[in-house]
Length: 308
Image (tube, rainbow, N blue to C red; front, side):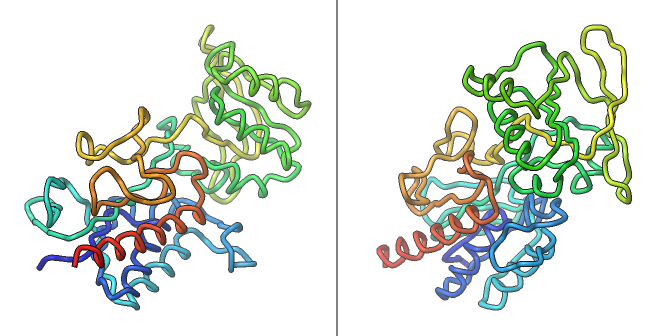
């Protein structure tokens, strides 16, 4: 059966697109991918999403969005898209050998925060390990935190965290930051910001019960290890947009983010739309992703009306 809308990916962008397109009687089919609910499913507490004054867990917020979309007729499948063909309409989408077709496609595959690849980092994600200072900084009032990275985004996160934390230590594998001169100066001039130069994290210490209690640092020049106590670790080594599926199909910038037309969710292929972190490397918030999901659904609806 040919669909009017297929949504590839979930999270706040994909599920909001599903809510809006379902309410427009477009009966969207949502393929939620390998991480149903997106990055929010590894976020324990969400306190900045409007309408939840007491806060809400990331997985619970995604469950509520999914239920809302299904209530209006969206079909959600925990399946991972393996191949697409956008060369002509109807567009083709494959789950392994199973082929699905649709008049429009909304891409909301998100982005993945780059990690160090430690087991302890994975186990403590949401329990003292974070990849988003603007999401979680508030929880570290008067505490000591570490920020891993040396680029502009790492400095931005570190300076933001000084609004809450008593100390912010930047862990960088070299002796000089990669960040722009103005950002470097901002960090160096801030009395709360300190540096672990020539250092990498070998292990993050703590448990889910206690949260993060410290790290084991390795000196990149001598190989010596040392422990440092802290209450939180923020990863700021970048994000990777989940766009490998669309290589040579959809226009991307040099970092792999999908390019959308100004003030819209239109990609370079008419009828294919993109929303959320897959095309947003600036804000990366649940609320902005949800807003762009709404835009994509409205754009798809208007596109379909124009085609009929």
